[in-house]
Image 1 (cartoon, rainbow, N blue to C red):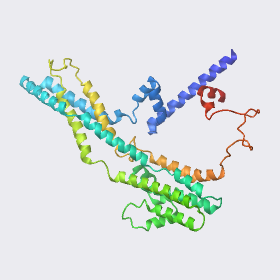
Image 2 (spheres, rainbow, N blue to C red; image 1 turned 120 degrees about the vertical axis):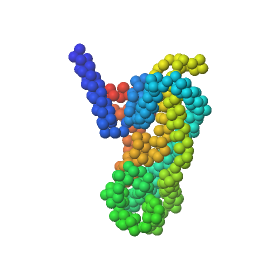
Image 3 (cartoon, one colour; image 1 turned 90 degrees about the vertical axis):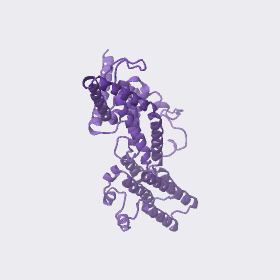
Image 4 (cartoon, one colour; image 1 turned 60 degrees about the vertical axis):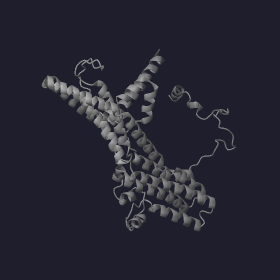
Amino acid sequence: MHKKSEINCYVYHYTLQHVLHFIVDRVDNMTTGGSIYPDEMDKGATSNHMGIGRMLIMWRRSVYKVVYQELIVFLLLFGILSLVYRLVLNDDQKKYFEQSKAFFQSYIDHLSVPFLLGFYVTTVAGRWWQQYLTIPWPDRLMLSIQIYITGDQEPIRELKQGLVRRSLLMLVLLLRSISPAVRRRYPTLQSLVLDGVMTRKEKQSFESIVPVVNLFWVPATWFAAALQDAVSDGILTNESGTKLIMEEFLEFRANCGALWSYNWVSIPMIYTQVCTLSTYSYFIACLVARQYTGPSHQSLQDIDIVLPIGTAMELVCYVGLLKVAEQIKNPFGDSDEDFDLNFLITRHLRVTVQLGLDYVDVTCPPLTNADSGQAASNGAGDILQLMPGQLLQDEHASKLIQH
């Protein structure tokens, strides 16, 4: 009994600790605007009904946050028109109002808002996803440099890190020109020097160039010059390796140019205007067309519900779709759905310059645990015949083993 009570006490303490951590994390996200865990949210949204409910009541990054102003204005105007019809107008004026209602109803019947919004949101969402896929990642370039530029001497290590750093410098200079968040992180070239992205000599050379156009591509010329010097000095002797490194870098440079082009050429304004005017004019017409004017044999409006619940749901869906397109049309801004480019820059700097090259050079482990190349042993003389990840198949069992 004593052992059982200890186990129950431990389970209670363990559960309470996780509940407190969950509450603290949620309060911190609500007050500081921190990021919501996307994989946890997706898991909750697909695994059980409580997860779906938790997802639907979220405020940050939700549809309610972007449509509540339009919904409040619509309901207020609808209520004012309803009161005017019921309390202010005389019989002749009510008859004219009912005729106007029939006119606006015929208008909204011929206005295909879902069709227009469907094409518009599909275009914007496809462009948004392509911009994400275009963001360059330096991992392949780093691995190519690591394979073909070998040696433990300090000049060689400086060369490898310098090549990767210059490719990242090109990316950071580009993101500074298209993202306000990155611009706030690196307001000046001196901030790039302090963060280790740019050297002082590179800063002086960069500032000496007349800025006729966007100069994010200048580090690409420095990269090519450094690689050419490595070939001339005999550090890089493999022609295939030189070609592969340059191909990876040219792909990196092409993605940077594609990002700049996406920021330069936006979706035509007339397309956005057509969808916006169609959506808002639809609900302006609904202010009159959806009013209750008494029972009618030609419609189902036999119940006076005062507020148009169905029209309000339409507004949440249609205006929500329009707001989604507006938010993801430029994913390099400061809204909730924009790309976290500062996190990406920090990740690239740590993985490539600070961790990647040094870690691969110094602490690369052997392929097997035993010196003779045998399979790993459990310490008792038995050979472990486990597939990768087999010990983690039962999550509950692994937790019990840890405790």
